[in-house]
Image 1 (cartoon, rainbow, N blue to C red):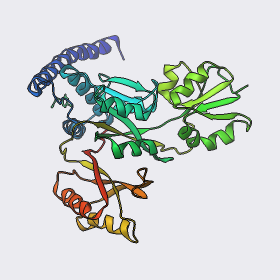
Image 2: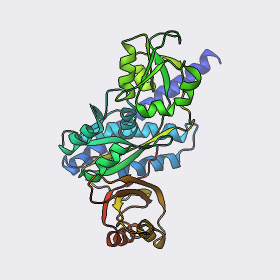
Image 3: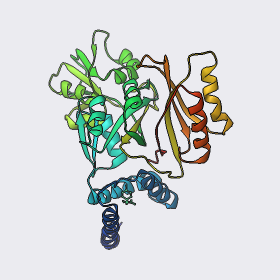
Amino acid sequence: MSDEQLKSHRDAIDALDVEILQLLNKRAGHARSIGELKGGGLVYRPEREAQVLARVKQLNNGPLTDESIAKLFREIMSACLSIERPLTIAYLGPEGTFSQSAAIKHFGHAAVTLACASIDEAFRVVEARSADYVVAPVENSTEGAVGRTLDLMVSTPLKVCGEVVLRIHHHLLRREANFEGIRRVYSHAQSLSQCHEWLNKNLPVEVERISVSSNAEAARLASLDTSCAAIAGDAAAERFGMLKLAENIEDEPNNTTRFLALGYHETTASGRDKTSLVMSAQNKPGAVHQLLSPLAEHGVSMTKFESRPSRTGLWEYVFFVDIEGHAAELPVLKTLEALRERAAFVKVLGAYPVAVI
Ligand SMILES: O=C(O)C(=O)C[C@]1(C(=O)O)C=C[C@@H](O)C=C1
């Protein structure tokens, strides 16, 4: 490529950047006016955000990928929303956890993330209105349900307003660039088990596996002691300046965690939604089958069914069910009516847009 050709492309990019800049600020001006109309109340509108992201993906003709376009618009909306009012998102800290990555993936970088010591605390700060939303892990493709989040959802007054699906890549991190002299490996219990085959094959049996409260905490501990390594993701590696001795060591190549965002308000239908509920069956034969039959009767698809011991002692098990569609729309509405008649207990945890990015 000649210098002249390069210059002409760069001149074109400079001219386009001026236009993009003007358009971005024009867009932000409209968001600010919308914010004024909302009167400082409920600014975050998950259903609208899902529609904007789905629309730009559909309109995209490349060469940028749909995924890149959605990520760019995710950040544009995040910045626009922060002019209306910046949001604070509570998550299981410390900084660098996958929960923080999920919070940023869902709310964008303009949101303020608030690290909490536990999932309980993350729920509590939102319940006490010291933060706007909590993002908490609910299930992992390898390890299954995150019990603590499910238990908290039974009793919280918060409603699910969004879901975030995050690919989880684990790395073996250390301060030194070799495997010699590793005596301990720290990680969260779930991550240790997501990588246990890799650990069996690649580290001597005498290396102790120690579970700690989060992967970021594991990276922090390993950053203080060269005889230790940690299993954690990119964000934690970056946060604590750790070297990657081995990358993508998760046993299951499609290792994915699903997170939920919860806040005080209910979300209207976006056109592609899910409804999450928790219920309990009466303690008699065939009760679970009977409980689920309204779904089939109304043609509603179930995307998740998870049973968990009840903690109240009133019932033996509670069932977490995700169904396709929004709780305010007909087939789901009818299904919920029927469930309320049959179940000993039903709580709608929230109706929210299916993850778009
Ligand atoms: O449409 C709105 O309600 C807006 O506030 C605008 C906007 C956007 O930037 O498109 C910003 C924040 C909301 O969560 C949804 C959309």
